[in-house]
Length: 258
Length: 191
Image (cartoon, rainbow over all chains, first blue to last red; front, side, top):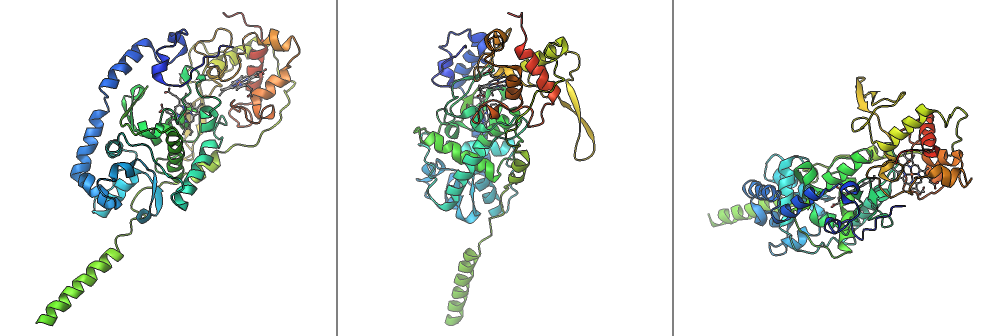
């Protein structure tokens, strides 16, 4: 059996693998060179900047956002690094994008669609305000986030769809680093999904959010794709955030992905 | 006059506090689409035992060719190579609106997890199936029934398997499971 031992499904380590890399892995040497170059100059920076402009103009920027969330501007970055959260006046555990929507409605504006590029950009901008903060989600904070964590774990473990697969079928600890077709399976905590998405996805040439990324895996593995913003999607984000928190990962937006 | 101003001030104060008390209800101000039912409908049945049908002809060259093709491809849209006899690239499905739609036929993409003779870019989540006949069938360590069950529903053999379920989910039919089985247990000359 050809066992390729990868300690991490991390792109950097792949570069050092000598094992007929061209054929075994989805990333060719040319792709990898491009990746290195993009690390210096992430194409998603422009989306984040654009998100910042929309956010500033339409919603009044950080100051207004902090006020809406009833936290001081100084504490805002730490607070953002703990999303998804239960927000009392919204009555649910929500994502940053949903807070943005509620804020829009509260000042009489039309809410931006959760799955729109405009929202992806705004979300990336707001999350980038927390760059360098440790992911600090607290699933013990209240009963709502506790329930969301439990739902997230269940959703992650539930096998379904045409092939009977769960997220855990491909992302459990005992399988991380093995190769699925040409792709090393990532440890979702180690690659800090919660800290690196929204990210620029090279293979899609666009900015993608964590929930949009989850949808990608669902589609590929024939799991019925569930909508962005649903309780289960937020719960998946909560669950995945705890994986990164356990590894002391920080927020670094926008990420750069294959 | 004085009292009037006082009254006005009090009234304004009252109004503003009541306004914040009865601040806009924001619990429906954002989108939270439903997914619970979608997931429920997407669940699949418990592990099931199957017996390989008598009609399975494991030496049929066409069956082996179909097994080979489905083993090495994800679906009809992405498939490479010549389509063997008796296999489609697209299937027609009737949608909720009654309209018939052409959808790519799904294949096993077993190569994502298993190395096998002549493979390109095989994964290693499952064991290598190279030399399977000589190693497992000829030695009687396994038989075709075992292989058939494994592909149809691997949970019978291993409740915590990482492998895909192929017959219980209805993604494939018995003949197609026969095709995979025929391919796995055949002698392959590819390098």
